[in-house]
Image 1 (cartoon, rainbow, N blue to C red):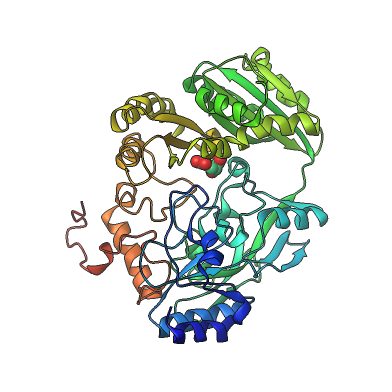
Image 2: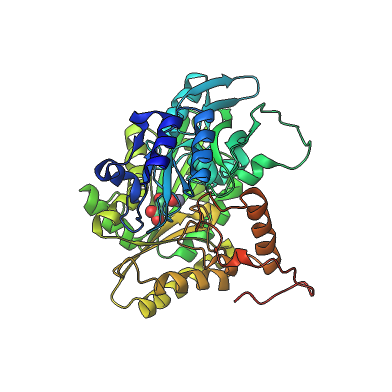
Length: 471
Ligand code: 2HG
Ligand code: ZN
């Protein structure tokens, strides 16, 4: 790294928080699955918004770009540097102040580097809770969750991060700061910059703080795991249960391969007889929802194929089987991960066609499918192909779109799905997105290579006929 950039970064955050030693950088330069990695000139850990702004200014002056990173739990390569280039990783680890819980408005203010688990505890201590939950809660940060519009297990009831982020603070590419942290439910003065930054994956600004909407605590919970013969049956079950279960909060799907792999990984016996698919349901309410759940399962003809748990350890055991899928797959190799959203009406068709598509594109590979059934969000993991062989990725995404779905449901575009974005967004939408990117980040300092194809950004032609061939 040039001495002048190092000096400028050191002036911005102090010598202890500029990591240039390769060993110290290593954990920030690769994602935890091992598929995405690159090289950074340095990792910086600013302590506050002014320091974030100073880091951006220093990088701009020295021709370096910024890769914002939260808990490094992302799965699409958007939070780690790319190979080559003059990149500085900006870690939010020290933006970790938990601020006020405003009880009247049910909102929590927190630094972008506060982990989900810490925020969940703070909310609970105030008699409230977060509507977002996912397995990586101990590492994933609120800033990162907002930046990729995370979904998780409870999106069915509470929506994704987009619905929950009431405001945020961010540093823009030129070092200026925007702050929408008042938490006003009604504030429609001008463009919704908070909404624009949510899901922008660090390409439009560096989120430094968030104001998160909370919900009333619902501590009475019951969980059921139902054995089924097919994904089609799982969709039918959900269609029946959803209107019958106002307390339904979680509705997850697991396939046979994933169940077996995860049980072996955990060293646990199966709570169910062998089955092609299983659905995990969690109901949450202020009074015990067990009867409501059991009655609805019986009415749906699924009572005898279900195991139900109302006590904490029983619930945790069933939930662990679902949550440990990612770790179980990672222990078996470096997976290709696709995170697709499919309309529920066509989910079974997608699942049926998937086997053939994967066998064709990656012969001999192992396919593991699970996901958030209630959201139509399937996690397609393929073990076998080398990390750089992405034929199977393209084919799975094409199938998702052919079934009326999207190439990215909750993990974001990252670097992984940049080429596939045009399958899910029209030429006019891509054009508008590029225009926003150019307006807010004209020099391309913020997370280049993520979200939009850099080659797409060079043309500024407005299609005269309302469409253009971008293929
Ligand atoms: C999940 O729901 C996460 O388990 C991770 O979104 C999905 O590992 C994956 O593919
Ligand atoms: Zn998920």
